[in-house]
Picture (tube, rainbow, N blue to C red):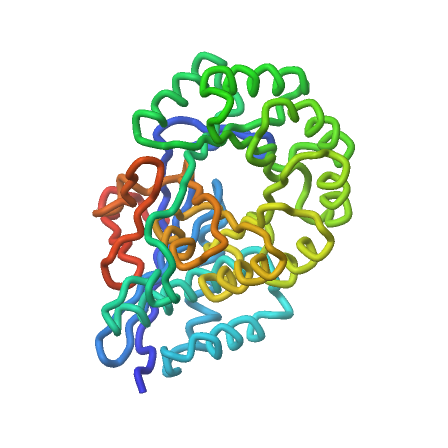
Length: 360
C-alpha cells in the first residue's frame, strides 16, 4: 500500500502586475496562493493548489494542516474517492463550501497529481484523454479600463495568439456596458468569439435588461449575471434574457451544480477545480453537464485545468485567467493558434518557482 506519509502546506502572497477590477471585488492588487505538497511512503510526490482573492489564504492552510492532514496521513493514497469522502464528511458540519472546499480541492488535486505521476502519465491521459489541444480565451479583468486601454489590451491578446476574449461588464450605467461591448465588437469583428462577465453585479431584472440590450453583439455568453445562490433567478435570466449564460465559479459542490443545471439556469457550467472540490468533483460536474447536453467551460488555474478539459468531449473554452502564475511556473501553458496545449509531462506538470514570493 502506498500510504500518505507527508503533507506540507504553504501560503504565498502573489502581487498582480497591474491593478485589476470587476463589479464585485473592486480593485485587486494581489491574490493568495495556497500550495499543498504530499508524499507517499514510496517517495512519490504530488502538488495541489488553490487561491483566494485578497485574503483568507491562511485559513485554508490551517484547515489542511490541522484538520485534513490527520484524516489522511497513513491512508492509501490511491483511493482518491475514499479520501475525498473522508475529507468531505470529516469537515461536513462546519464546511460544505467556502474555505473548506478550497482546502479539500487543493489536497484532491495533489492526490491526482501523485496518482498520475506514479504511472508516468500526464493527468489528461490518466483521466481518460480526449484531445490535448483545448480552445481557450483570454480573461480580461478590465471593468475600469478606459475604452482605449480595453482595445489596446485586446490587441495584446491577439498578439499572444488568443482567438477568443472575455471582457468585464457591470458598470454603473448599462449604457456604458453597451458602448464598451459595441467598441470591442467593432474592433474584433462580427465573428470573433467575445464573452462578457458581470461578476454577479446585477439583480435578476437588471440582468434580463442587460442581456436584451447586448443581444445584437452576439456574445458567446454572459457570465455570472447575478449572485450564485439565486437558482430561480438564473433560470429566469436564461429564459427571458435570450443570451447563453455561463455560471458556477462560485459554486462549491456537485449538488449546487446539479440544482442549477436541473433548473435550466446555466448554458455553460463553469466549475473552478480549485474551489469546487478538486479534480474529483470537477470531472463529475463535467459529466453531469454532458448528460444534459451542455458544454463545460472553466474558471481559474488554467495551467492545471487544461488537463481536465483535454480529457472531456463536451469542453468548450478554457479560461486563461487574469490571475496567471506564468512568472512563477517553469513551463506555463503553451498557446498555438488559439488553443492551449495540455503537456505530456507526468502528472499535471505545474512546477512552481516561488523563491521570489513572500510567505504568509
